[in-house]
Length: 384
Ligand code: PLP
Image (cartoon, rainbow, N blue to C red; front, side, top):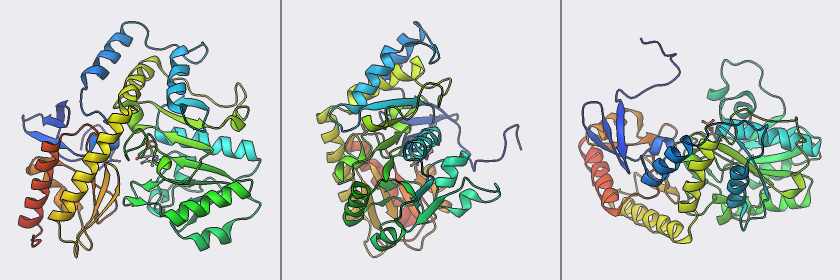
């Protein structure tokens, strides 16, 4: 027992330094980091341009609050909405907080409270975001939830159609459910949602906390679908490791939050904004996004060639990849991967989640797949 609360099941490894995809622990052992701090380190550890942006900004001004004008926040917002149907941004500090803002905005704008979300979704741990999350285990023990969330089966068009009535303010979803098992939205489900939202007074909130900022090979994952969100939430990759989050919305929502109706002291802090601007200047380049897709195809093909398809299903989008191991529980093997120099996380009981930095090298991908193969053969006794 130490002086921290017991709310995380921590691996017994203390990571002390990192460069790109490689991290070292306090004993000097190196690992390939295919967790990226749970999809946060989109440019890997200590990217020189992010270090420079943070250092330079730290010598100018750290914090101003939102009492004052912020041209750097405006520039960041403009970068995020460029060539999008979205037009405005609000900055905050975490994915849950971004989702809180989107839920509040949807309620205030529509004057309605009922929000449809999906089973196995994950939207965060604050009361609103937790209540939006369609997983009982996340709710357990915390008493009454925020009212009026309905959890429907994901990718089930019929159940969605049957649940639509005048009370629905918004539909909220992840384009690829990350924590819930790396489950991508199906084309027909996306088309049905688009039709429902277009034909009814129902807002679409897309939670891009995990999928956004290039993770799936486009700036945002919704760009690969028919979906046209009114609100998009983001965090994780947005700061490449520096905590910053945000909400993007359409011009119709501009007046929904009048001054004083919503805010956060640290939101759009100059340090976070400086780092985030540098992240976006790199990740939103077409050539960088193309490379993500090339690497993702390479990794997925290699996994499919290596892992027998009777036992393993590889799915996801871009560099958010799940290996569904069927009836194999993955938690007991995470330590074996670590012993062999590969950091991975799970997504639900049977899915291994691969979240390498977006600038991972082909050589690092080859090494990671070799480790995966060796551990599965030696420890799990899979015939490969
Ligand atoms: N939404 C999604 C899709 C997430 O994956 C997460 C975190 O994993 C969150 C929201 C919550 O973000 P945060 O932990 O920054 O509050």
